[in-house]
Length: 73
Image (cartoon, rainbow, N blue to C red; front, top):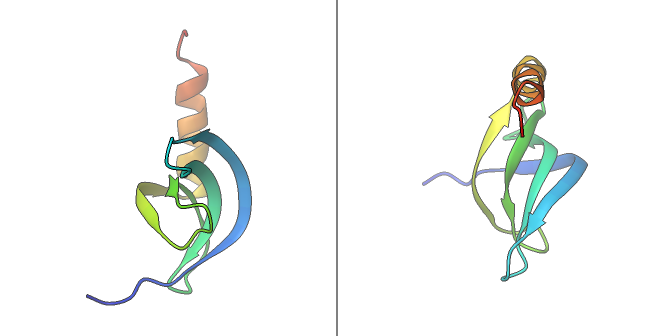
């Protein structure tokens, strides 16, 4: 399996921390040297390991924001 290269360009924020010390984070990440995308996933404390997550373009992130703003919580 090919190695996945990533660079966290900007940390937007941490949503939660697990008992094992991993953080669920929203970051701006460049994957394999491509244009950075917004990324939501679990990260180990030093960002050396990651869990499954999702990446979003700016337009997708705006759409998600709008959808979340319409939820009655």
